[in-house]
Image (cartoon, rainbow, N blue to C red; front, side, top):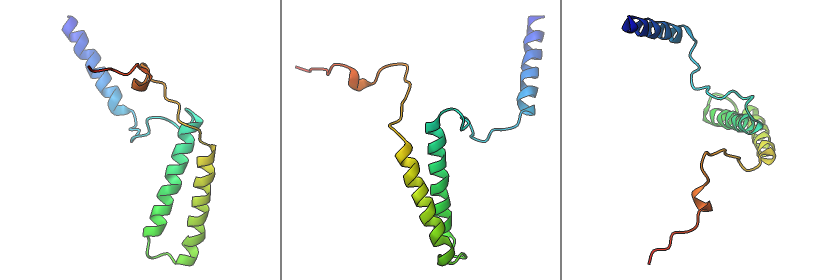
Length: 102
């Protein structure tokens, strides 16, 4: 009786997992913290610059100002970032007393 319940619950969870859409690596939404939103924006601008520089079909006069604007946006976004604030469950190893070996 208990095995049938466990199997039914497992089948229900498996069907629910198949019915949900895949997030494709979007684990943390941008609304979590401003640090991650800014980091994602910098990543997208860097990716845009890479795509524009690698595309030989686009004229230099067209992609030049776009690359310059994207680099200026990256510079402005980096200026808004402070140092990352990690919430670790344990203190960092540098906060411990140094080990003395005799």
